[in-house]
Length: 368
Image 1 (cartoon, rainbow, N blue to C red):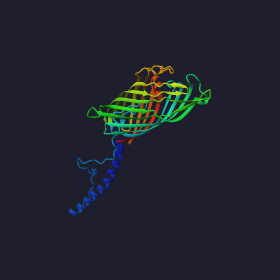
Image 2: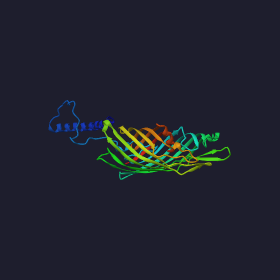
Image 3: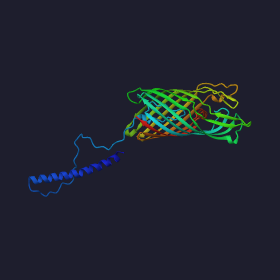
Image 4: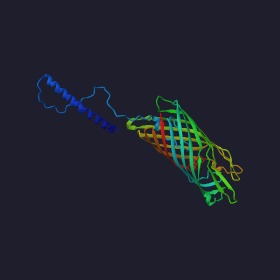
């Protein structure tokens, strides 16, 4: 990068040096005419070019503005998403693909599914300490169903279905404060909600001629969390380092529903979530990160007279998310892989509507 910028600079200096030498030569010749007859002299070889006075600023090509450290934190990915200690005002759009090979977390239905999602979102930073964010997703969901109503095979026309729907709208707020003089240690609180606005419905034709409409169970999410993190700039040799730690609670609450003549009792679930993430950006345009998340159920859900809810107990979910980030001007491009690392992630991924595994590509525009 340094040598690329110096090449145009040397070219400019060379172009300016030619007229300077010509002016100097004409001045010497005029002085010779005034003092005496001109003498034929051989010009000295290796005459140095004029130098700028000591302390004068050197000419520089326009340099790229140095990005602040909050541009380099690990990227949040739904499942639930990481809460950052500091963030610039930003707008983003992302496309993700998620899959789950086991839908047993859903009542009265079995099979597998996958989902394409387009999400539009953003965050507004106010007074450095506060960040408010929101996201609106759109889903294209496909189910391959093997059983309905706890044992009945679906009709061939219903076994494979794809539906477009609005996803759950989410929003939240983060308050943080720098605990040291710099950015090395930042702490605060976050609160996020997810409103069950999704409109996914799948019809199933029954043997008696009726139609049962299955709606994937929806939950109202409430997620308070503690946030720690920081950033270090090691300079050109080491690059930048950022780290984030989240500890919090997830409350999943939803109303009961019905699938044909079967009543669905939707239990309230309490989870403890933890996120551990670190990012290293060796160059200003490239960074790499990894995040590990764990979700552990806190409560026990008893079964009801009509619904066996034992599978909603003892949930232990783990996933890992390696990612790459690319910076171009004020834009950032993230490529994120989220990999389920436990049997419980298959179950929880269905409840969270994020699948067991996912791949996300996000384009973000930063505003400082």
